[in-house]
Image 1 (cartoon, rainbow over the protein chains, first blue to last red):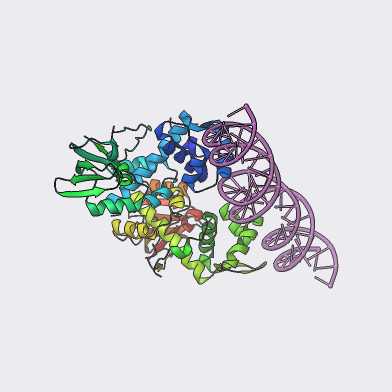
Image 2 (image 1 turned 120 degrees about the vertical axis):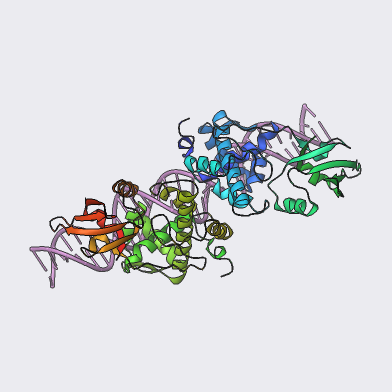
Length: 226
Length: 226
DNA sequence: TTATCTATTTTATTAAAACAAAAAAAATCA
DNA sequence: TGATTTTTTTTGTTTTAATAAAATAGATAA
């Protein structure tokens, strides 16, 4: 409580990455499998099995052999603390250092491991207490609270309604550059004209101007509200 | 030349710390001993012996058994690149995040290992191309050039002359807090009134106002020009 | 100049995090 | 259900960076 980070300074770089990955993978609610973690971290299931045991001992995950893992309350706190750092640094890179939104992820992956609660709280103030990162993802506050926007993927949104883009998947720079090209940004207005049943691609109007066809995979990675 | 950092991304955290330490220890000109490195890095001579061999293989140091080490040209470039990062981050922490000069070292030690030339060059621009860090140490430019000010320790400065503080040793937070208390900062004017031969302490006037007695060890860590 | 002391290096271990190969459990399919 | 496939775990190695203890080189002193 007092010093949010002191408690977490026993965690190595690698451990932090596992906790963060498990956090992201369990956003769907289910237990996370060994292979899912291995794929995400570009490592092998054997390595994951090992690390999982260690993290279970440290009480940051619940682990039942062969059944997958999920974060404990403590584990979630740690994950949110890392996510907070990651997203605040992303804002800094875009707002202050003129990075494009497709260029920040890799550097933020490094910066998120810097240990200094003081620095992050000051950074947040310096940035004017932003609520979202450059991709529209919410930034946990200093107590680790995070406010989710109830958005859905464009691929599941209703037809012929005015939609607003609230966030896009941040992991893939190519997607972000593609969105730049077609003029989709956070806050853009979209309207679905037609869903092509054959391949689930979507024809839409962007900001009442351009008509575009986007593939299902693109539509999956754009979150909208109506 | 093109990407200053890409060439250096083969270096681990630990290796970078060794190179940086050897750089600082060899500022006096002589070869650096195994024990000196071990003391500085709070590790054991046996560990240093191991690492030294690896760094010599990587051609960043010249190493003759039992005779100590010094940096090659390549090694010096790497050291200067790390120093550049460290000092720019220190400026950021003080100027933008309101850290005091005694609070920045530890965090900068972490930040200096972040690999992104782009970020550092942008950071430098964002900070207005500062030439010195908060302790008065010069910041290497993007080509790794560094401009030393020909200063000497207060303990070796002449008596009864107007002196200007150009830098102070950054490693010790307690010294920095002490200097805050007695009103010595970068740019302060000092005049030595008397050198006490018995213990080499120095009586001086600070900014034409306060008279103070400082110990030799303090005077060793304040660099001045006249 | 030999003996002693100190600094350095070598050797053998340890811990973290990874991997491949083998073994075991769970899931799927026929 | 039983057989096969897939997933997960175990076992045994590897690499990096550290350590302690032992061996050796260099410096110092008698």
